[in-house]
Length: 277
Image (tube, rainbow, N blue to C red; front, side):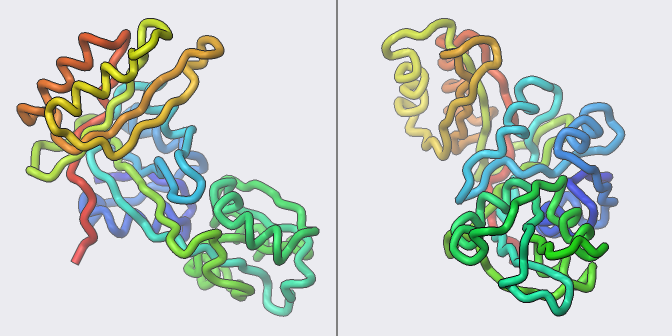
């Protein structure tokens, strides 16, 4: 398979690819943005794209959620959970107290906000397209600059590690999803992701939808909302439940949901993540 991801090589997305079974033996194709990787899969320039969808510290990657709904045509085929351990990188000789600018993708900047606030309160924060892009800029000679990136990026660009594991919590997990033209066949240990809108704001509307899963004993592993982009107060609800859409209980629940919502988006059924042995 040819799989798109947020590049260049050395990003956390690149690390997640190494954990995805469908990427083994395939070709990794780097893109500058999440949108470009997604569009490449949508237009069949690559077979799939691996994109981050949520982080245990910063929450959902809203750009990817919006793409799944507003640019339909791809479904989730895999999920990958990557422990993220960001480091502060700089050119050899630069001390922590001399850092005046910190470059990184917006997600790691948010994940490391406590470290930045406590250790580098005067440093300016600069968003880059990726963590590797930040490391490359620092390696090119940005004065007084450091990058938040992976330790692999330090090796790739010849940078020194000023600090390691600088995330706000001891556990920093990013969930990635592999999106492709088709989702996966049932495995017996699956998850299904959907999105839906209600026809109007009314008491009990969301409660009735959730009841379709409760009555069938299906566990919900995620629920959240995003603006529809149509008007204030109108939302798209994103929901994950633990079953395949083709399982009897999953199929029945989806039929019940369809009768209660204005629009239903099936985002895919796929195996629940298990750490490779």
